[in-house]
Length: 371
Image (cartoon, rainbow, N blue to C red; front, side, top):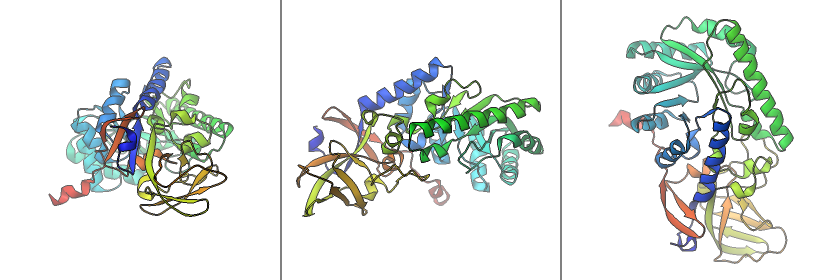
């Protein structure tokens, strides 16, 4: 089937670009002796997870416990959960995962640790964890200089085993230039080095130093401490990646296919893709370089100026040949959000649509309590 024969709106994945992205990152990691445990929330797809394993990733960083449980069902052994848990239902799920695979939790709070230790004791497991270190985002994490103090405090929990440290340098998503991205890499490397050093000096074994974001991936590859990298968006890329100069537009693999359905006024066009396709993300951490709600491929004169749920609004800033009935492709600001809004993406090569890619890791475990 040709792309222009597809129903709109649709979320397209350029398979050639996606495969090139995976190969580029995984080969670079291999050359530097690093493992890649990608963040799977970007695509939430079993099929694409298998592709990442085939391309060379060693495990996965999960954004939800649903994702971790599904991957464990598929036999994936190395899994890490990105966020602390602090309720008994979640802690029980974490303990159950620890029985099934090489599962690594992340902890930065003693109260949460107490809940997890109790769940591990009840399940009869030793739960592995890394200490979350704040490398600049100021969201989760202990300060690097306090890592050893936190590890000592964690010794009160006999069912939790320290494996190392983890971080997410997410403040890079506020960067608008290559120079600002580079500074975030410096923050990531320096702060993780401090945390690793104080832990080792205090006699702790630090097997795992895990860190990552797509923008800082290449800047951290030659770091002597970081041994596991967690890019996520690298499989698709998007406007946010391009706006900071991190990647070229030609690497963006995910687009939203839309039709122009109305031309109500001079310079104004409406399309059949809205917030439920493109998402409303304009940079989670204050990126001022983002204009509008996506980039229209081949039409630099157009800006996506507004989104309702099912309809988008384009404004032409200068001459345009756009007409009602035209089919356009839009690179979303944040591919992770857009991919999560559909049950399927369409895999394409050139102008051919090859088939569907199920987005099948979006389930909500709440329903299990009612079954």
